Length: 283
Ligand code: AMP
Image (cartoon, rainbow, N blue to C red; front, side, top):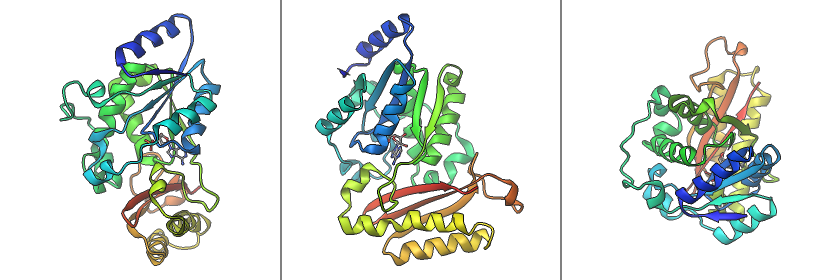
């Protein structure tokens, strides 16, 4: 695996790859890699000549400075996992490389409704930061395919919109890959490293509650299903931000005749100080 720290060196290398007719699959991450990330690396590698992973803990997407400070960093282990998975290129930029003009964002991305709900509502500014970093990374890597995890459901929809807004959608295909989970159902996440074993067991209630909604979709009203999930999650000792059943394509509220809609349930809850998110397609 080749490691690049400078955007200009990576650009030059990837231009040479393109000249040879080699395709590039790209997996952006914030590091502290786990099997979920590695599943994206393997997919990118299987479907392209060159697999590029970036590791960059993006300061502009953290609305909570304490969360940014405590974000796990395990770079040596990350490099080992990437090499084992056959990743070709690791881009490991510093903040100045991504934000040469500083981290005060000067481009506003028109995300509209998407930015006002769910993660957008609970983490003001978060998606502008996500768009800023992904826009910059896509401009540097210019991949044929971008690989994202369904785990961050709203982020996938935001990045799809970003790609349409910037026009890069014409040259880069978007692949969304299923969420990998621990044995107890807890969605794998870098933030899980901050949980104790007993907290991880308790946090499994999130997925169990989403599953309960899926199993009972046509048996109870959506409002009661959502309320029931909030109660179960809070009974296990977590604090819920939201459990919301929404349209799976744009996250607008489920309509009255929702039986004809493709639905997703999305959830966010705190286990202690650690904020966890998850989702499940319902039909
Ligand atoms: P992150 O490092 O959290 O920014 O995640 C980098 C990429 O990995 C994003 O596209 C995530 O959606 C994806 N990802 C994170 N957790 C999982 C998981 N449990 N299963 C599959 N993909 C994941």
